Image 1 (cartoon, rainbow, N blue to C red):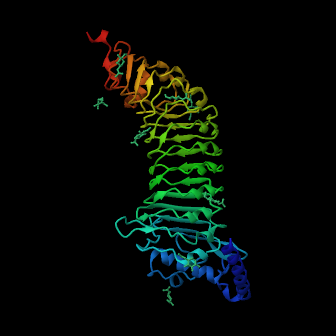
Image 2 (tube, rainbow, N blue to C red):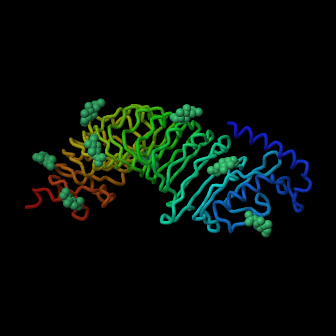
Image 3 (cartoon, rainbow, N blue to C red):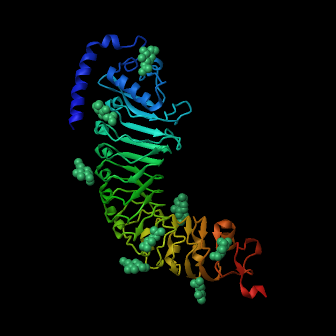
Length: 428
Ligand SMILES: *[C@@H]1O[C@H](CO)[C@@H](O)[C@H](O)[C@H]1NC(C)=O
Ligand SMILES: *[C@@H]1O[C@H](CO)[C@@H](O)[C@H](O)[C@H]1NC(C)=O
Ligand SMILES: *[C@@H]1O[C@H](CO)[C@@H](O)[C@H](O)[C@H]1NC(C)=O
Ligand SMILES: *[C@@H]1O[C@H](CO)[C@@H](O)[C@H](O)[C@H]1NC(C)=O
Ligand SMILES: *[C@@H]1O[C@H](CO)[C@@H](O)[C@H](O)[C@H]1NC(C)=O
Ligand SMILES: *[C@@H]1O[C@H](CO)[C@@H](O)[C@H](O)[C@H]1NC(C)=O
Ligand SMILES: *[C@@H]1O[C@H](CO)[C@@H](O)[C@H](O)[C@H]1NC(C)=O
Ligand SMILES: *[C@@H]1O[C@H](CO)[C@@H](O)[C@H](O)[C@H]1NC(C)=O
């Protein structure tokens, strides 16, 4: 708070000085309103120094890019006009483009970087790329300088970026998008990210984060996308997640989460994707789902969920397009209600302990392109149409069901599903 007030005061003084000198600041060859607009000296120096800290001392901005927001643009830098002066609004550091600058192995966040007055978007992608060299971590101090400006902060594909997420990110009140994908960040997820009520996108996948998901992440009522997949997170799916009232996609896959799927999530009316696959989730498939009518993809594979398919109200999730419950320890039969999910494209029930017969109604699902039921204990004759087998090919998996058989008389041998024996009466 103090810092930003001081900055504003300083800014006004600088603007007044530069306004006084405006004639000398304007470039000669301007042919439009904004083309020849000047850049505040401190902003320009801050930009040069910031980039030099990121890419190395060999880079001399004032030499190469005397007019960085005008006729000598820097790849990855965007500017905008504020009261007739250029300011940097976006910085993309790293090899995003063919000719963009590689980052220095000893990348540093210089104090001048935090003096950029109107920075809205900061991205480091393919920047800290050498995992073997001395690893770089995100500087912890001074981020509050950006608390009233920064809307997007992204670190993507930086295998040499380790250490923790600075708690100071909790001061970035304007953040709408906070993205950490495929770095080597570790430690626990900062609790105060739950304070960032403007957040729409929170993506922290592919790092080494440990510990529990903070309960207050459930307070992010404006959040549209939460992706914490591919980490080492443990504990339960927070009961508070019922508060994610705008959420569209939740991906917590490939962690070490345990406990039940909380029924609190049943209130998530807009949720289209729920992926909890590859965790240690248990407690049966009986969480309430009465308002989850937007759900299109439910992916719970590779969890010891156990229980059966009959206690779940499939009629509430009538928009499901992908349902993956493979390897979840399911027992009992496949209820008829599953074949009423008219929009299903993918149905994975393989590698469970399901028994009973396979309803031919599943073959009538017009959009179904994959049906995997292999590795169960299904019984009886397969009763799908010839067209169904032809359409599906190997995307119909029914092998390893020792009591399931294929009646040869009805359809020709050419469509016999892989690994399914012939029914007894035809074999003799
Ligand atoms: C950049 O080059 C100019 C002259 O070419 C020199 O005066 C200035 O000190 C250099 N700046 C840095 C940061 O190396
Ligand atoms: C934070 O900013 C202050 C003031 O600009 C500066 O003196 C200090 O060195 C900065 N700290 C770091 C770690 O950059
Ligand atoms: C931010 O979160 C921290 C930790 O949860 C809390 O102590 C603090 O009061 C919060 N600050 C604001 C401004 O909400
Ligand atoms: C999975 O969770 C159960 C408790 O439900 C626990 O006993 C078991 O150790 C966990 N397994 C792993 C691999 O974490
Ligand atoms: C859900 O199923 C599990 C085991 O399948 C059972 O222990 C639990 O009581 C059930 N919960 C509800 C709410 O029905
Ligand atoms: C199948 O997909 C089409 C196109 O995506 C869609 O319009 C239709 O509603 C879906 N459902 C069925 C039952 O065909
Ligand atoms: C498969 O089902 C049959 C009855 O249909 C039963 O006798 C058998 O024990 C089951 N096998 C397994 C592995 O559950
Ligand atoms: C069938 O199951 C056996 C034993 O569980 C397994 O070894 C084999 O790989 C499975 N076959 C196929 C085609 O998945």
